[in-house]
Image 1 (cartoon, rainbow, N blue to C red):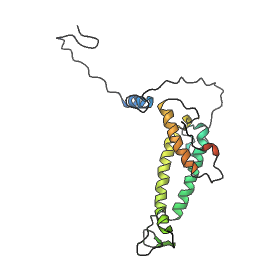
Image 2 (image 1 turned 90 degrees about the vertical axis):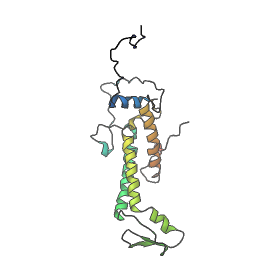
Image 3 (image 1 turned 180 degrees about the vertical axis):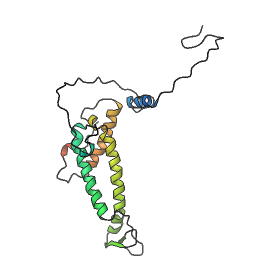
Image 4 (image 1 turned 45 degrees about the horizontal axis):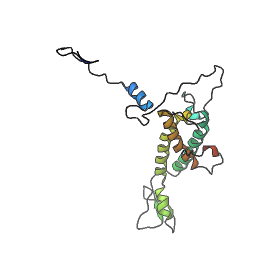
Length: 202
């Protein structure tokens, strides 16, 4: 006789192939850390009961209003970063949003794409530095940061001082560290708050 799941000798009954997990099932496995995920060992966190009259935390980020996404105490930080990126975008567009270059035959001059002189800077290699930080490059960096910020918004409510030990919480903390570093670039702005400093966990 065959063992469990093994047909006896001489049995010609077709054996059904293992079912391939669907897209949703594979996504759930990744979030739990299974099947090659980041956290192979995970523990299930029982949901905490919420009183029906408990106040709901509203997201104050205008870009997320109406999306069903609630970021808890991180909404102000996300709104701050979005506003600073919008400020930089406005400046870059006002400067033409184009790429600049420094012709080798005219040191100190910074030219735009049309060949016109954007401005002239003499000495200390300022021209090369300014040309590198051209408006087009600034706009590309802003777009990249917005993509990262959008990923963080999806899990920002899990970015807490004492996160759970599951995949989504780990993702939230990792993205949160990057967003906090991004916010720290604008630490000189009067709206920046010290509580947004990156968390360094041993």
